Image (cartoon, rainbow, N blue to C red):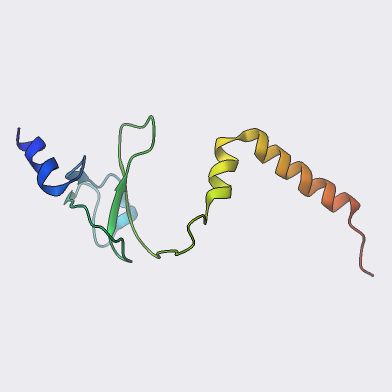
Length: 104
C-alpha cells in the first residue's frame, strides 16, 4: 500500500531505486537509495531512470548534456535492433572504399 501511494505521489513507476554500480561516484555510491520524482523538463545534472524492454532492473544515470536534436542516436538504435541493416551499412561502406579513387 505504501509503495502504491508513493507511485501516485511521485508520478513514477519506481519511486525508490538503488544505485547498483560505482558509475555515479563520487556523488552517489553503490548501495545508495535514491528517491525519485517525475519532472517535466530534463536538465543537465538530473538523475534519470529508465526501463529497457525485457529487463527487470531499471537503469539509473546522470544527465551530462541535453541534446535538442530529436533523432540523435536513432541510427545507432536501428543498427542494434536490425542486424540486417547493420550489415547493409557495413557492406555499403566496404563497396565505397573499394570503388573510391585515390586523389593523388
